[in-house]
Length: 294
Image (cartoon, rainbow, N blue to C red):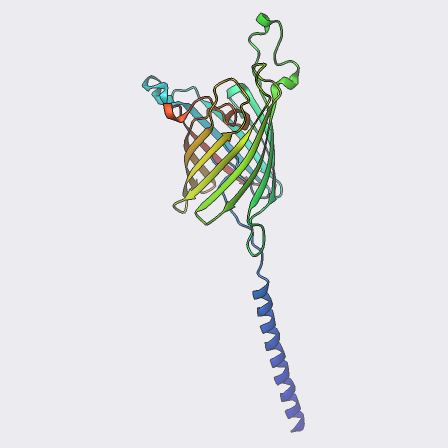
């Protein structure tokens, strides 16, 4: 009888100990919540022309098609820009780990070939993590144009080879404020090895902002604006500004927009936008993104 009593007391004490341990575990989990990274601040790596802070996922390849029509003020004879001239870019982008990304592309205007590197330095997270995301971006561009004035002026302006090259750099800082609203600001810098006029400066810089407002599960309104700070050229250029509509359809993201820039890469649209909104110098364009997991 005594053995049964002792055994019962020991079992009771063990149950109380296990119950107390479970309470402590619950208390510890409540005091130390798991850090979670914010996802899909923007839906793709670009909004309209401007890069976003996003990179593609781990071992993911993104095939992108960008298309830009002529200006609306080209009148009905050109179907308000649909007949052209047009600018097309085909691009491939890949990330081995979801943070570091690289890509290449070919643009029809200026027969431009570009390559870029992109790295997510900080990612927005909950429970004491970073309140912002920061992504670094660097790119290089090579024009494939020929100098048609070589015979007349006695030299080829694209010799040496370095005269064909230009570069762009950005620091993208953004936050997803809610499931529906995201905002990003990005100081930018563009360097041209060759400029058209002796009075032109080789460097242009400014700041760009992009925002996305999601209004259904698969659709959003987008907006971007690139402000130029310095006077780097005597030519008449304007700030790039665009507004768009984004649709997600499975593995595709389709973006249609109106923007005053004709160029599709940073050394073209950030510093060399030559039409403006207030005289209908805007253009219809679209981007299509298709991702593949490798």
